[in-house]
Image (cartoon, rainbow, N blue to C red; front, side, top):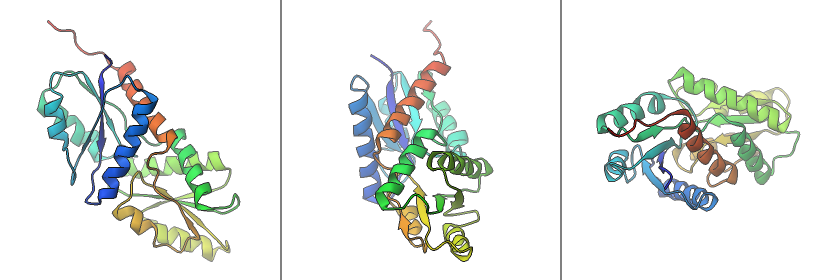
Length: 234
């Protein structure tokens, strides 16, 4: 059997967020039916990461963070939790973003929202106090620019500027009659509701259970397997 895939979501009080995560993982399972796929959350939802790791003790596992940037959770929280759990058969994959597959999903969400090809786009990430996470959102904006062939302005829903409100307002003030806002978010919840409060004419739904996102989860799983070798048993 291949190693299990443990998808680690951020977690939210919003039940729709957990439902969206589970819908994404159903799509992952449909693409790789031979793979055992589990789900857990870093906060505010269950099962917790600690609970999931306890259940998988002794099982060869790849943890795939369902996170869009390499912030504190990926660099510190997850490695420390794995080390504390003393799970030598666990490996940690990279965060999902930035990646061209996410640009594919974002472009589709813009089309679904009705945004025309000529409208300028603001990419609204969750935001972070971590410069690496902010840089990831900026890189994602460049990838989306390459995908859709028009400028994309990165913005941050918390902790950094410009905010989506500021970025949309600046484009409108520059003479653009309409602006599209692409939510760089995986699931519904607090940040998705905040993203919907700008003056943008079109606002996308979260990425959710998009086929390109499901393929990316499996790509990160495969990368982690290829990059590391587990120690052999004594």
